[in-house]
Amino acid sequence: MKKLFLAAFAVFAFASVNAQDFGLTAGYVNNSFDGDDSASGFSIGAFAVFEISESFSVQPELAYSTSSVDDASYNLININAMARYSVSEKFNILAGPQLGFASGDIPDALDAAFGDDFSSMNLQLAAGVSYDFTENIFAQARYGFQLNEHVDGIGSVNTLSLGVGYRF
Image (tube, rainbow, N blue to C red; front, side):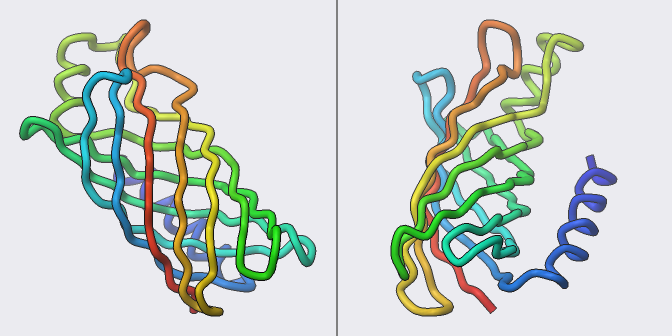
């Protein structure tokens, strides 16, 4: 897991050198487990923006989120690739895949119970919006629908994230 994180960080760092914008994000995250329980927490991350045209860009991201329910933790290291369409000068629509690797008490318990039938990978399709308050400061809201399951028949996690960001 550490090697994967370091490799993703190296790719992100190299890519951000050629990006038009890059910055940091932070915010609230809520993970919904199979629609029953939910866990609240926070996320932090970094992103780069590659402008394809005046109204379309690609936004790769590297983020860490943590949440807990009943003193059990659920952590994700996410590698996201969001497409960003500018509806107006300040309002954007976001959509794309989010690839996360889960750790913490909840994934550890599932791994202990199901062994090889457990997957720590969390593949989501996310959609959301962002609003630019200034050239540097923005807010975003996003919902990710998990496409796979951690364990067959159980273990899907959908994610709501609300955050703010700063572009350098």
